[in-house]
Image 1 (tube, helix red, strand yellow):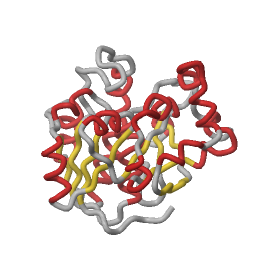
Image 2 (tube, rainbow, N blue to C red):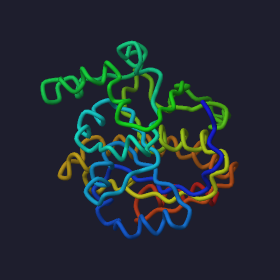
Image 3 (cartoon, rainbow, N blue to C red):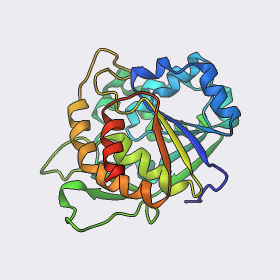
Image 4 (cartoon, rainbow, N blue to C red):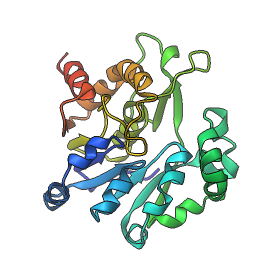
Length: 252
């Protein structure tokens, strides 16, 4: 996939309900300071409420798109770039070799998922960067093995025998960002690592967050190695579990 060289500052907005504490003015200040907005999953639903259109958007689970379809606007088609897995093509045939779409199939009777299968989601964006990814199971990594996110767009996960869900921040969003943005110097994060609150689509729910904690702990070593190697300064909007643990890993 083509590398992006003109981006040095990114505000990464994740799915937790804490993103509501990030004001529109603060986002605009970040943009005016030369920053780019990178939205993950259903965070675009919040951004729509404050009339902010992201520069970049990603999701991994088709359910994220199915739940967010009504958040897209004409402005997306004029501005926003989507990073999309090639695994979605051919009716998600390759995607099914390592993931499932049960939630998306059931959501609202499955009519939005049928649109996703036909790749109609690409019509919501100004530009699509299709990419291949290298799947690596955390529980099968050798102790001395190092993973360079610049070599491939990596998706970290677990083998079927372990059967855990992955953490979208450390296992998908961060490896992609480090790979694609050649000259990234500063990354500010909001909406990831807030394990005490729900996510945008389920404010009262914490389902899956315990697995996210376990996966983040396992992936933090490789994430911190790549952050240090590429001289990226990271910060979090809120003091949370990911902030504390990643700070420790970066100090070592």
